[in-house]
Image (cartoon, protein in one colour):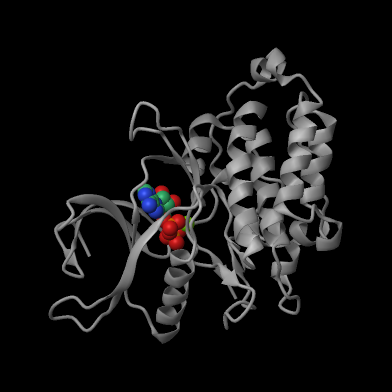
Length: 310
Ligand SMILES: Nc1ncnc2c1ncn2[C@@H]1O[C@H](COP(=O)(O)OP(=O)(O)O)[C@@H](O)[C@H]1O
Ligand SMILES: [Mg+2]
């Protein structure tokens, strides 16, 4: 699929704007002349097609200001080819992903993290209330819109990519272990455990750690990371950035508790605790920002594009 291709008689592809499991194009709806984003999943096998249909249906049910809005989905059969391509059209977001933001700035200040984490946790809370777990929360799946749609438009974070999400009821794939290794919780490494929303809490914990310190809680190669996820308590974030308040340290480590029952239990609880922890300190004093020197970009911080699927 490339620029100029027409999908399902209505989406004219322009430039490629992302990709991983699939490929995402900016496109124009030829009748409405409306700009959209189209996610394409070529060469779907039977299992892939089933998974894709589940993702589209799941997204189609959701309506939340911090979740990307889906317009349409289906299967496209390119002329003269037997390969079928799944497509999902959605609102075209402008801005950058949190992953790109972090590779520009290294880490973020407490006020920046506070404005960003609230909408993410609200989106997760909305999903969890519907018995949906995202299972792939990570910086490349959080999009920071830049508010460029109008002078009063706010910059809004939106959660993307429901390719690994599962409905706790009824999805035949819900017990499959899947995820991106650096954001994977200990229970996702254990095929005998039934997963629940607390895997998303863990992933937010990893993301908070990354935003606060510029580092991931578990370093090293794939194998070492897996060992540490299961068995090693990460050093508190203040080990790397000494100005991080103790209450934040404790909260992040509680989001990263190995046993789900010892972890922060819900997105709503995490949000309340975060606000309490930042409120305990007068971060407007500027001490944090003053010391938040930009870290140079580190190659080992790249989150992995290839998900680990057992
Ligand atoms: N609606 C959108 N508007 C703008 N960019 C998008 C949109 N959806 C996805 N992208 C870009 O494409 C990338 C991959 O999309 P994603 O849905 O995460 O698919 P994958 O399963 O390939 O990770 C995102 O990280 C983002 O940069
Ligand atoms: Mg993604």
